[in-house]
Image 1 (cartoon, rainbow, N blue to C red):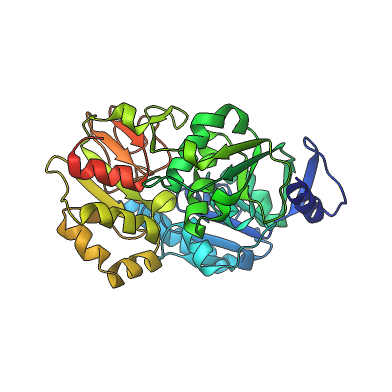
Image 2: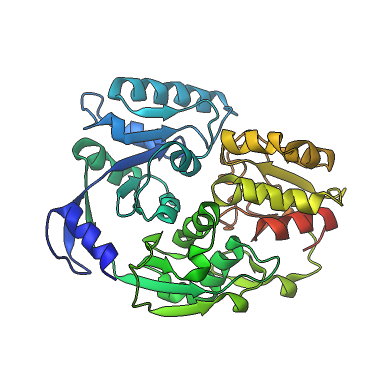
Length: 384
């Protein structure tokens, strides 16, 4: 597929590139947050300058409001850095980095994004080519506005058809993990086909958000007409409710295989499934049933705008009335930083993106990854 390689070549100032080639591309947008920020600032030389702070977006979303004095102290340091360097800072509860840039910035097909976060590929829903870096790797990008990278091999996946009733975009992402994880690992993934093109922006964001968890270098939705040579073609009718079992997002099974498994915690929202349509699915399940007395159900809107729409549509009141807890917009329990962490013996079913031991608190807790519908259904039944 030419779209991927042509846009990298354009950004590198050349006419042609090949997989495996070392190139240096101009970066349109640089991202970081308070999860990776402490290490970033520790490595930063205060005497140096960011090339163009207007293209640098920073968010406080991992631990907000601050759960510890240390977190609060860093947030103040982060704000001071942003002011000195002229960066764009969102630190008043605007929400998760990936949702905030989708709502407030212009994202376009072929733009280059570099970010110190593992899920910057969420922007691939809009055709952006987004690369996840460590804080160490982001430092030179901030200084120069360019990124040195080895061109990854492209894997093109065409998804066709309409999803079965009750099957959500998160199930599509888990299905891809189940079906093609070995193929996806270490490659850039282009998504196309009538299934993908028929989804909302939110649905496409959900799929692109998850693919780095199974090893994708980046993932993006190919603009219409740009992909005519898929490596794989998959069909919607094959997809059903899916679930990743501990201890890896690669360990995917059908939900029906886990039916009856007791859960004690349910978590929904954040960067993976915290958009309005996800909240509408959750409210639909809770409309007729309350949260099971043995389950704690924590819900985190992905942004302030999502929370506002939840209020306007009456979803917030319904969800609270049914016994769930709505947190302030942000990453919520997912990073294990605060609010909703797991204890030894907990069994959690979540829409978050990692289920390695210790991700959300105790390493002696189990984490299952599923869609908002599957999570909400488990929350009211007390079992998967």
